[in-house]
Length: 420
Figure (spheres, rainbow, N blue to C red):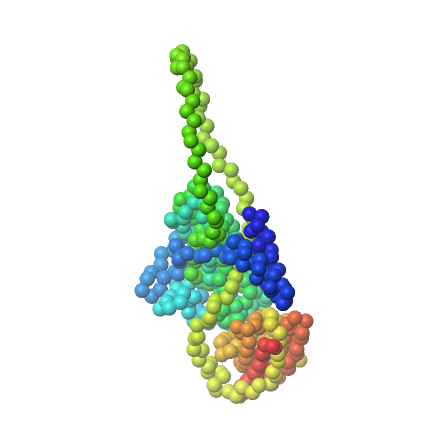
C-alpha cells in the first residue's frame, strides 16, 4: 500500500515537472514499478443500471408524488411557484424571465421530456424513486443533468437553484447526501451534468433516491432535470506475483480420552430486545459538474421585431471568460420607456419598464459561448421620444457604459465577444 502512495506521488511530480532530466528518471521509475499503471487510474464506469429520462412522445412517464408535499404536478409549459411539469420544451414563460428551452437533454430522443421545476416558497422534496438491484460493498457514481432556466429577474436578482440528492435505505438510514451548489446561469441552454460517488454498506437491498430544493422559490430558483443515472464504479486491480503455497505435512496428535460429563443445568433464556438503529448524520457534500460534450444545434428563427426594423451595431466589446452582469436603466428623465431585449435571437427580457432601478440579468462568456448579440427593441417612446437607456456591463472588475437610443423604426445592437 505504501508503494502505491509513493507511485501516485511520483507520477504527479512527473506530470507537473516535465523537464529533460525528470522525463528520463520518471521513465525508469514507472517502467519498473508494477503499480505505476494503476496509481492514477480512475474507476471504470459500467453500463448504467438506472436511467430516468422522464419519457417522450411515445413513452409516458409516471411520476411518484406520494411523498411530495410542497409541489403539484401540472400540465403546461410554464409552472408557477410550487409546481412542476413533465414537458419537452418551454414556451416564452413569464414575459422573458425564463429563456425558451427547445428540447430536453436526452440524445436522440424524439420530443423527449424533462422535469421542469418552479421552486416552492417552502424548500423541500419534489421527487423520489426506488433504486433496485444495488449491490452491497459497491461504489457507484450517481449523475443528473440540470439546467438553470432563468434569464433576468424582472427587476430582481434571480435566486440560483441549489438541489440536494439523498440516498437512503428503506428503513430511513442515510447512505449519501450531496448537493449541486448554486447553479450558474446556463447562457440559454447549456446543460450541466452533476455527479457524485458513494459506497453501499455490507447488506443492502432496495434504496430510495430523494431529491429536494435547498432554497426558497420566488424570483428565480427554477430549473430543469433530466437523465438521472447510476453506474457501478470498478477500480482496476494491479497485477501481483502469486507465490506457491507452502504445504506442510499434517501432524497427528493422539485424541484425549472421552470423559462423561453430567447434563448441563437449565439456563433461563433472556428476553430478546430488538436492536436499535442508530441514525448517523451524513455530511452534505458538493457534487462535481461538467458541461455536455457537445451542444445539439437548434435552429433559432429571427424574431419579427428584428426583421421589421434596422439593427445597427452601436458597440462592440470584448470581455475575458467569466460571468457578465448587465444592468439596464432609463437614461435621463423617467418617462415610461419600456424595452424588449433579445439575446442571439432568443427573447431575454420582455417589456421591461426602465427606471432608476436596474433591470438586471447575467450571461456567461466562455469557450462554449464566445459570441453574444444583444438587441434592444423599443416597445414605446415614452413621454419624451426617443426611447433612451443606459446599459452597464460588468465582468471581472471591468465596466462599460453604453448609451442606447432606439425607436419604432430602428433597434440597437451590442456585440460582445470572448477576449482570447
